[in-house]
Length: 242
Image (tube, rainbow, N blue to C red; front, top):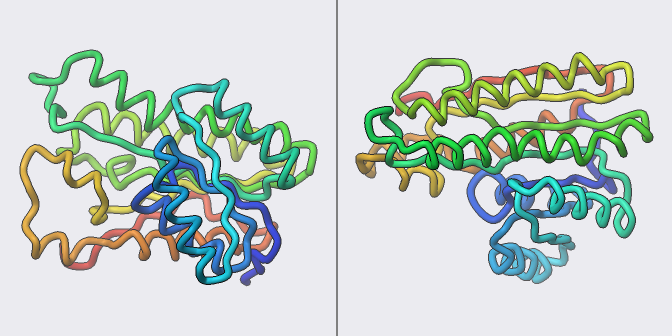
């Protein structure tokens, strides 16, 4: 029940670190034509150079997920110069140490929602026209267990991640007649830069037991490789012991 990624154009947004970076690298090694997108272009270039030293090609584009215009321009550029986007992955995300309601300013709420949820909408809005024209497409949204299970990650983070789950389902139901699928992946504690934004530092033991970016990336690539008649609508994954 697994299809090859060879030659497929895979757009990974939020690819400069963590889950996005691991996904871009793994998909490229699987033979996909990967376009890695993020604001931190220097990190993208470093990843491109590392893969090039292994004989693997990676395309990079700088774009800010909070700008619909930048996302639309980036997607148009990819479609014109690289090819039709078969798969898009939204792995951008943020949180804040000021996550409790009693200390969260409205500006911080807006920032978290803008990156986690509105950015996901911007990506979908940009790639859907091309996918409709192609009669096929797959969008994988990286949410969080906070999108399904109440926790202490903060009101803005939980609201945004639950919103991503709703966005994924809405797009799937509206677009399935156009051959477009969505998946909302909800990983638990993952050892990425986001843990640095926790109000209290996690222990080394906890981080060692956490999911690693590669664990989540391997799951995303598995979802990517499902045949067109199969849709994994949502997927929850957690560390066994953390």
